[in-house]
Each structure stands twice: as structure tokens, then as C-alpha cells.
Image 1 (cartoon, rainbow, N blue to C red):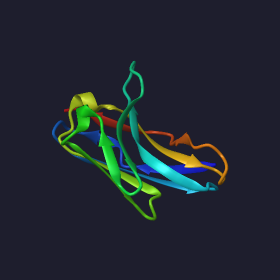
Image 2: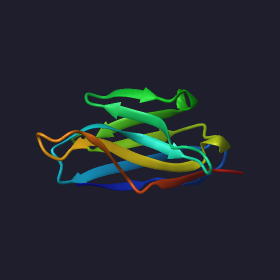
Image 3: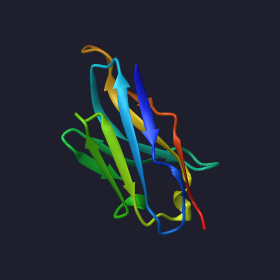
Image 4: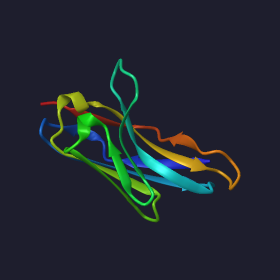
Length: 121
């Protein structure tokens, strides 16, 4: 299975910045995409940003120009630098990794436990 260590959430004022970090470990064969989804109260979970090997990134329209995703440590750590945060960015942010457990298994998404980001004055 795939385990995650997430960090970096918290409370920040509008216009401020936070940096989320997530490291995947465990018994898996290969990790493909990694990224971050978010879920605000009463809303569906939505993709914020993802990054594949060799580092091609995709962003949701609502974070373009404000968030930057990067991948380090043999490609098993993903970071999300969040700048110019707005109250609408308040949500639980979930790290995910698309991975295979063996060389012959299908890839599927594995999820972290989530970290709370609150943007408020």
C-alpha cells in the first residue's frame, strides 16, 4: 500500500501564503501522477494541481498564477506553494498519488488523510 505524510496546512490571512508538502512511501511498484485535491464544506472534491513524470504540471483555472506544484526526492514528494490565498481557498487539501503496487497491477489513486487550509482575517 501507499502511505502519506502531509504537512503545511493552517490558518492564514487573505493575500498570504502557505506551502503544503506530501511524501509517499510504502510497498508500491511505481508512482505516476501526484497532486492535490481540495474539498470545501458542502462541496465536491476538486483537483487543484497535479504533476506527472517528468514534471509536467496541470492546474485548475481557479489556482493558475497563484499556486505552484513541484516534485522532489526521487519523485515521491510533492509540494504545493500557495500564494495570494483567498477565503474561497479554504478547504481540506488532500494529497494523492496514482500508483501501481506491482508490475502487472492497474494504476489507481491513493489518498492522504488531508490537511486543513483556512484563509480568514
